[in-house]
Length: 633
Image (cartoon, rainbow, N blue to C red; front, side, top):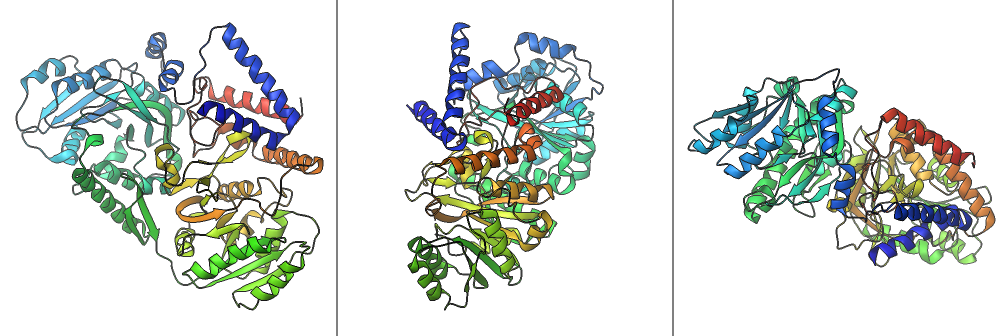
């Protein structure tokens, strides 16, 4: 039933964006494709079918044999370090076997055992292979200390972290060495991961985004499988005491302060299986979890001090997620630019919610009047202009061009920071300006977006993924406000490639740097284009879910439902595709190649993921297909 609902919504989505006839052609192509699959007796994966995804996407026995024959230009030794403490024999057996099964052979396993008594039964596993090193410490130095002892044993060029009750995929080290050969300057790598029960059943796959500092500051999403270049590990001084339960989080944060982000690589494959059992981290009781999260808060607080940022760290909406509220520096002026056409009742809800709830006081509201026709809206303008925080400016041109209207409003404003705000919104968060300013004042941030709800309290916007639906789409659309989507990412402060201009803050200087909003994109994707231009200048886009609005979505705009509007809409799609072709081809770095672009709610792809073929060939093929589409062939 859910799949049928998804398909119906998908068809509506395509009709709205591409028109009826193009949608019919696409449906026919999909039908023919499925028919061919049925004739060939090929199984169609369903969204969320992880077992099917594994079958289609992970190496088979012959693939592993072929990997073992590969001669890399660089074949570095990988030292896999494991801190041990009262490790169950069956878990040690699985750790050792997962190493012996590796398709890449130049490795060593460094086991540092802090158990109170040496276990003679370990010997049969330790002595299986000369690449396995074991040291009994005679005392428990904690996870940090035991890990450091294992690191001291390492002689490899790279240090990989593995817990004593988890397993590596058989091709994990092969993928690491492949990444090293493709990226000679790489200093740190991490992969996707899943969980494994005591019977080795796999579930809960976490397909992660590429490295993003605000995402890391909100959650230790890097976690497993992580690999450090050895000289980096030495520079960091290994694990630090005082962060028990979050010692890996601390070292990842310290790593982020040292390494150029372009030398941090994400391998979008499941290389690590995190075992869940009665004694594992995933099964900690609430007191133990609180201890670990308190250590995470300490790690974040110390990180902020080291990088010179002032902020308050607290626990987020669920366990394992953190929240940082940055301190506002000074008292900068904020200009709230609101385009308006008729709709007095709608605009009054928006403005009244701002005036009644906003706690930060140094702001102005700039209403940009655009060809209204009703007397009541002009009477309302006279009324609100009595408030010295509000001014109404009159857009001089006919017709609707959102980008041009915003550009006009920005030029008429006087604030240090600009907020684009739709007139069909209602503020829910009183300290919204403080929360947005705290991020926007950072030198590395160029834009901040918020969480928007439909009136029925389902999510309308939780950030944007470029590529969804062909161009871009809102994340987690229509999931309940009280629920959680994929790993609760709708409730995490994150770096994204784009956020909606229905409510977005930017420093004024950014408009000058990127050339303002592109007036060729009158209606569609102008905010996504603007965000990508901001990112192109080296700034971050931040999604802050702790700022909330109701969005009555395009109440005064209407639908793209006549031939002229549809033609313009399709032209803007083509303009966007031509401009951001390379971005669309390579994919959104804040998403994951294993996740579907046909839905906004983070489902696994229901087809084989083609990340194993030659990367340059794949890029050229995608580019060729996109060019054909743009030329109408």
